[in-house]
Length: 191
View: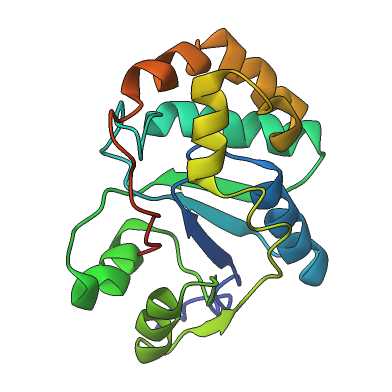
């Protein structure tokens, strides 16, 4: 007499949004809100990119601090379900999607507005969607970090829970210390 295995359930669909979230701001929150609105009940994975880097001008916050910002903001906004996962940067674009597959639970689509990231996911056979960006110039990470370094005008750019957390960890003083002595070229958005 042979035993039969119970039928396996199909994989649960999930979406993936990777960002550095340096820091997590209202533009990020609007993108997450839009993704969850488009696909209610479908879990979202938020990958904290370049998780290994911190205390630099471009990446001033640790992966743990970014996790805390995201967690507090999503809780405050009553958004979910979302899984937040730190991801180290492997510096090899051709292997990046395979690396993500090995580090994350199964996902079936990616969300990005970055042309290179779109290309990499599409070449790997993933469905890719581009969420609408909200006030991109206002919520640019480098602009927000400059506001933090000046300790002026940054609070209206982040969710209230994130503003409170950034104050708790002394973010304005940290950014003032990390500010480059000469102008920094605009950021390139890479995976």
